[in-house]
Image (cartoon, rainbow, N blue to C red; front, side, top):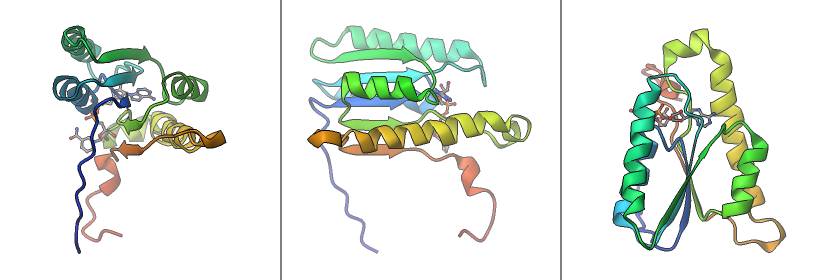
Length: 164
Ligand SMILES: NC(=O)c1ccc[n+]([C@@H]2O[C@H](COP(=O)([O-])OP(=O)(O)OC[C@H]3O[C@@H](n4cnc5c(N)ncnc54)[C@H](O)[C@@H]3O)[C@@H](O)[C@H]2O)c1
């Protein structure tokens, strides 16, 4: 199998990162702000307390610090839920992202046994809202989203030896 890697330029792009207060999302926002210019980033996170919210707040403060030093780039943070379709649609309408990175999710296998609703809300409905917003970003001849990147949960792979 041949794997073709293509570099895409992120300069002058508007990038919507969900789960931007999370472990991966916050690192991504920091990396984008530090390496790409000019760039426009919109972060979304509901700041849930699945783990200590102080860690998430600290990450957001680190992002703010780096963002405040950028002259040509901009960073906005929206606190809200991916499962809120109106909010997601509003963000797409206002910012018209070129690239969407969906990292907002509920992770963890054990937690899913006791709190299955959270997984359906964030991972299924939330992801569905992103897919729909990306699809409709092309409506009426609009330029639309160029790239959608998402991270699946490690919970999905399971520990089966036989992978379907
Ligand atoms: N960290 C890993 O080793 C790893 C491995 C495999 C897959 N992943 C996947 O990568 C993604 C990100 O992982 P992470 O480690 O950064 O997790 P994380 O829990 O640190 O970050 C996820 C962020 O999403 C936010 N969030 C959750 N539900 C939301 C919702 N409905 N609306 C808005 N925000 C919401 C949380 O508040 C959190 O800040 C997840 O899909 C995860 O399953 C991570």
